[in-house]
Image: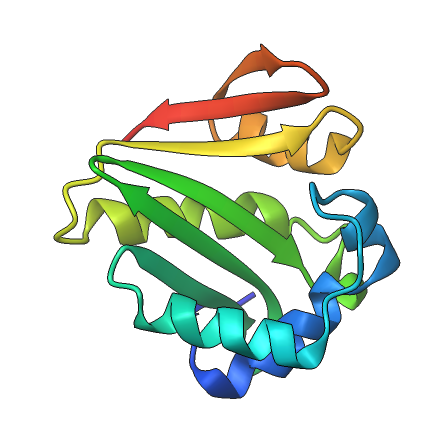
Length: 149
């Protein structure tokens, strides 16, 4: 696998939307409904323009296999990621988190810790955070994962 993160561009928006509207992604998301193209494009453009948002596409060679977003508030980055439906179950979840950690360590943002909220029912994502050394704290129907970097 030749895995790397590339900075997302507007050309990635429709791929990200299709992954987001996948039924399994919606089931594991805090927002369950389908997102319209117009709403998504507006959101995506705002995120691309936001200097506190780091939005990446996970590439395996020349194939897009997922995306990860790190929203930074002060010195903490909150992770949100998804793997393309056809790429699930191949270890990309663990890799995308590790690659994002490296990006944030090397970034000028001063991020000292990363967090991620995961529904308890999303065992695959829980495993990905745990495999990367994150600590889980109970948060009702979800876990809040955190790690100093």
